[in-house]
Image (cartoon, rainbow, N blue to C red):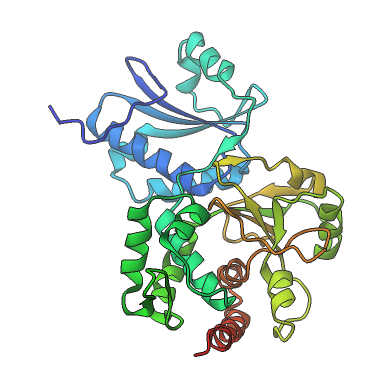
Amino acid sequence: MKQNRINYKPDLETETTVIEVKHHLSAVRTLRDSMVKLAMILDEKTNKQGYLVAVDPRISVESLCFQMDAFKALMQPDIAHRLKLVVMKHGQSVGLPPDFAELEPRVIDQILSETPTGENKLPNAYKREEVFLTIIHRWVTGQGPMTARHLEETVGCNYRTVSSAVEMLGPAIERQSDRRLSLKYFPERDWKRFLAIAQEVRSTVCYADASDQPRSPELLLRRLEQLSRRDVSIGGVPGAKHYFSGLDIVGIPRIDLCVHAPDRKVELDFVSRIDPALEQTCDPTRPVRLAVHFVRRKKAMFENDGSVLPWADPLECLIELYLAHLDHQALGFQDYLVEQGRSLNGR
C-alpha cells in the first residue's frame, strides 16, 4: 500500500468518490492548488473518482474548463480519466458528468447546504516578496532607512521573514549604525527574478467583456468613483501616468485595480456594479478589460492626493504594466523610478 504523501483531507469522501468543494472560486491559483491535491489523492486511491465541485464560481465555466483540460493534459492518463470538474450555479449543475448524478442525494445536498454566505478567501500571501517590494518602494520614493520592525508592521510578518528578504537582496542592502537598513541601489537582478514569478506571487482576477458593445475604460472608472471605495486603488496605465506624465502610451488599453485584502477576504461584487457585462476569465485568448489585483500586506501604501479614488503605489503600477505585456512602457516607467530613487537617495 502506498503511504499517504500529503497532509490533506478532502471535503467529502464516499466509498467510490473523493470530492473537493470550492465556493465562489475567484483565483486561478486556488483552482490549480485544488486540482493538484485531488490528483495526488487519486494517485493513492486508484479505485476512486475525483470531483472538483465549483459552487457559484466567479470564474466563467469556459475558463474553468480551459484550466482543467490544460491541467489534465499534463497528468497520467489513468488519473486524468478519473478527475472531473462539476460546476453548480444557483443550485443547478452545469455540464454534469453522468456518474456524478449517481452519487447519493445526501452528498449533493451536503455540498449545496454548505455554501457560505460570507466572502471568498485568497491563498496565503508570499510575505517575503511583500517585504522585498516594500524595501524597494521606500527607496524609489526616497523615504530613507527603515527598521526591521517597520517592515514587520507594514507587511504583517515576523522577523524571520524580514531577514529572509534582506538576505535575498544581499549586497544591495546597506546597514546603518543604528541597525536601520536601506538600499544602496536598485537591485536589477533580483527585480528580474521577481518579475519571473510575479504572476504566481500576486493574486489576480481578470475580467473580459461578454457583450457586443464593451464600455470604455474611462466610463468604467467614472462608475467606480461613484462607489467611493477607499480600499480600491487605480493602478496600471492611469496609475503609472499619475506618477510619470511622460509615459509613452495613448489611451487606456485596460483597467488595473488594486484591492487591499490584508486578511485574505475578497469581495468582488463591486465589479458587476461597474459593468454587469464583465465576467471572470482565465482564457488567454480573450482580451482582458479589467484586472483586479489584491494587495496582501497589512498597510496598502496607496497614495491619496484628494482624488475620488486613491492611487496604487508606483511599484504595483509598474508590475501591472509588465503583466499586461506593455514592456516598452514598463521599461520607460522603471527607468524613471530608478532615476528618481537615485536622486532622492543622493546616489
